[in-house]
Length: 258
Image (cartoon, rainbow, N blue to C red; front, side):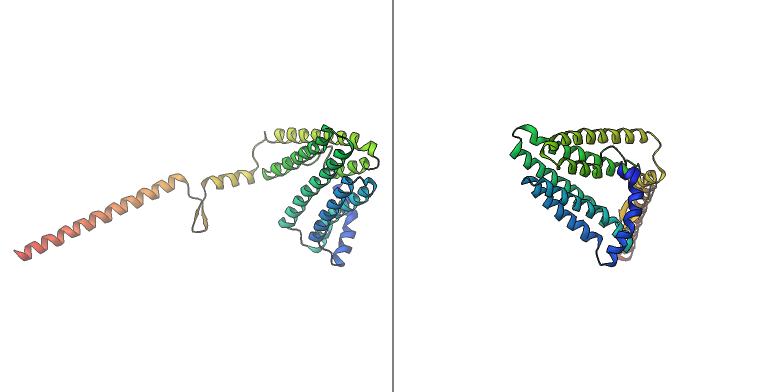
């Protein structure tokens, strides 16, 4: 929901902040890395029962995640490597924070309730995977009721009081599962359309291309067979000529001897 409706508005608001941080020498990779550190601190605070401190640290983690993109744009360093780094650290941060919640539940709610944060983590990972896989196939799979920003906001509300935490976790599980189902349905429906031209071309190249000497050669199978037959016939011709030459030499040597 955040990416689908409010991302552009938030980016316009955080753009000046990103430019200011870039002028101060702050890099996007630094923000991403320190965001992982603050996520670890959040997990420790939750696990030890310091829920109010965890709210402050969770907000700090969210600010790092919110500002690394504008800083990258302001410095002109947006890259595939940076996007990959940011995505991986987001997944690690989610695992750490929900692991801290599970640790807290072990101490305060004995029983199977400890599995609830892991169920949320599994559903959240499915949501992220669906988007990544769909985009690799040329299909957009953004949106949903419970993306990462909404999960962090709702989890922060749960940290306000120990009495709120478990009901909030159940709400997160239901909405995250609904988001996963919604994305699957969206991609399934869009996948019925013809394959995008760029993807179709890429698939055709992957089927017909071979690697020869480090260069790509898109030779069709029929052309390859024709070339192979020509090579075989030329080899047969060379063999016949060599044999005929040897026979001629032997005949001339016999005549000389006679």
